[in-house]
Length: 284
Image 1 (tube, rainbow, N blue to C red):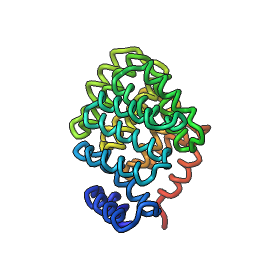
Image 2 (image 1 turned 180 degrees about the vertical axis):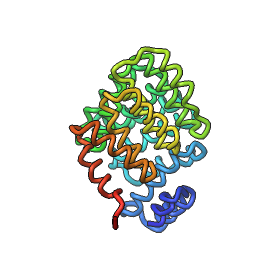
Image 3 (image 1 turned 90 degrees about the vertical axis):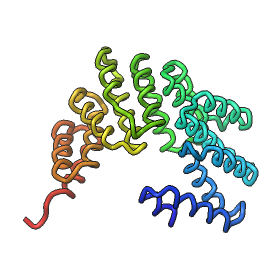
Image 4 (image 1 turned 60 degrees about the vertical axis):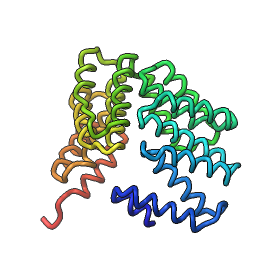
């Protein structure tokens, strides 16, 4: 609970200490120890300055839980993406190759998903598409995992090679240097190229990544662009809903009304109506 509260407040250092304490106060094989090890690893792998410590934590988990191969596959995937976040795609690729060697073939789904993302960062559309397709056939894949991988596959499949190159470059820059990232060059470069049917999906995916790495301002700019430039796209209702969720009340109402009126048949319209009713002023 302490770690989760720290994470909610953006204090990853305190969260790491809490997970270290929990792992130290419990024994391998106990639920708290397993959970603390996994959560600690996730924080370490997401910090470019903590990758060596993350690697040691991964090895310790493999020793303590040799049968937990499904979890370990996801951890190896996180490690590869962490290396990419540190700006080292080549080492990330090698880490995935080594993980495949160590894990049984029915546990390669997370590795294929991570490999698809690395190929996308490199702008290699064909490789990214093939890897994303392989990630979809993992046995016993849960609904959230399937949704995430389908989303990745759909974005790569719908965009053309030029868009993949531009978006991949932007995604890599967002991951490695989120604070200094400027979407302007990417937007201008894409504007010079005829839009494919997947342009809106690619921009929406870039917006989601911006939000994940702590750049809600960029996410808002990209979502506004999707709404204004590609109103007939399948991504427009989702962009409107995302804008409403992050806007002040008055502005949120305007976005929700636009979604309800403009996309009454959208699966998101009922949710937008509920959100709008909750935002209506009371006592008048």
